Image (cartoon, rainbow, N blue to C red):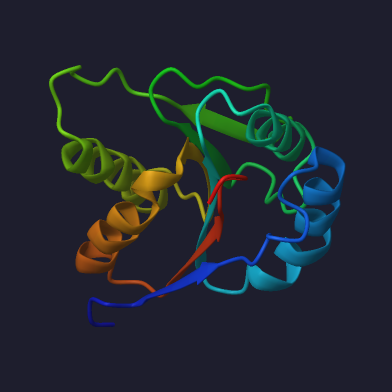
Length: 158
């Protein structure tokens, strides 16, 4: 399959974005039907230190609405750490503090592709600052040879 094989889907969470419980309920109802590609990324965008975003990420990662046992990975942006459900593994690489924003996005995209290509994962949750979403998708879209879905839960301030 040629490159440019990704589908970017930014969820419309405006009606629930200021409430953890409503956001989690929305995601638990919406996400299972959207995970329909051979490979999928669920991007949990956040504004760092925003309590709604933190609460949503904690609940979704500890009780995921979609979990492929043994085939699901969580990738954390530097400095983020949340409890995760059994059946998932996690990865957070130390990043050189001198890396640019775009370089960090490319590094995270590489971690996602590594999960797919080298570790037989077919679902990756990413807990990350919302400002990285498009750059990570674009980097993956340039290198992925397999059809993939990239589902974005925007930050509560987006």
